[in-house]
Length: 341
Image 1 (cartoon, rainbow, N blue to C red):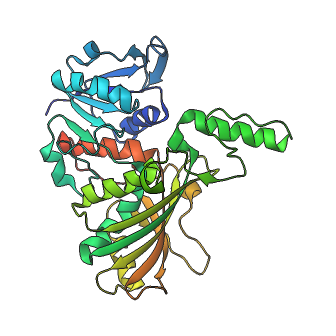
Image 2: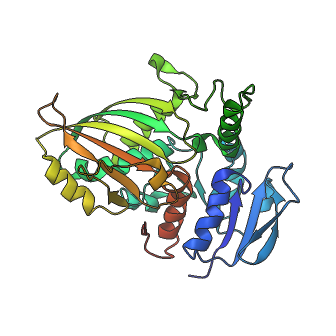
C-alpha cells in the first residue's frame, strides 16, 4: 500500500501532540501530513521531523485528498467535521466520545477486538481512556474465565482534562507552597494536594458521564452486556497516567498465580507485582510507556471466585493517542501493531 496522506485534527491539543510523538517513534509511514486545529490556532508553526508545518483551520474543505484522519478535537467538532472527512474518502480514527456508542461505528482496542476494525464504514472510535486501561487487564482474564462482576475505582490524572489542566496542577502546586491564592480555571475544586469525584457531569442514577462511559463501552468492546460493572471515578493530583483498582468476580475460581500467568503473556501488558519490595503499578512508571502496568494480584477474601488487582496506564498514550495509532496501523495494513514498553 502507498504511504497514506494523514491529517491530525486537534493538532495543538495534548493528544494531538502525542499523535506527533508516536508517529515519529513508531515510524508511522505517511506521504503528506496536515495539521488541523481551530481558527484561533491557524497559522501557528510546529516543527516536526525536521520540517516546519503550518497549522490549518479545521473546516469541511480541509479533508480533500486525505487517506487517514487522527481526530481528537472534542466531541462537537467531531460531529461537525468527521462526516466531511469520511465523504472525502478518509478513514477517521476518532478519540472523542461522539461516535463510541453508535451501533454503526466499531469501538476498538486492537489487542482485544481487532476483528471489529473490518466493520468500519469510514469511522473507528477510540474508547474512553479509563475503559481502555481497565479492559487491557480484564479482557484476557475474561477470555479464560468469564467475569460476572467488576468493581472499579479510578485515580485519574489531570492529563485526562487536557494540557490546561496539567498547567493548572503545576501552577496550583507552586501557589500552595508559596502560600498564595490558588488559580482555579479548569477544575471546580482545588486539585493540588487534593482529590475529588471526577469532574464529569452527573447523569442518571447518580453516576457521572465518565463512569457510565466505562460501563457502556466495556460492554460494547467485550460484546457482553451481562457483565455487572460498578465504577467510581476520582480525579487525583497526578500529572499523567491513570491508576485503577479492580475487584473481579469470576464464574469459576481463579488463583492469583493463574491470573499472573495469563496477564504476563498478554500483549500490551507488563506485570509489575513484586510483594517483597512493595513494587506495584505506579503512574510515575506508567508515564511514557506503551504498556499498561498490572499487579497487586491477590485473592478477594470477600468473594469465593474473586480477585483483586491494580493497573496503571498512560492516559495520553494507550488511553488515547497510542491506541488510535495502533488502530490505524491495523486498519491500513501498515504493520502489525505491538507495544514496545
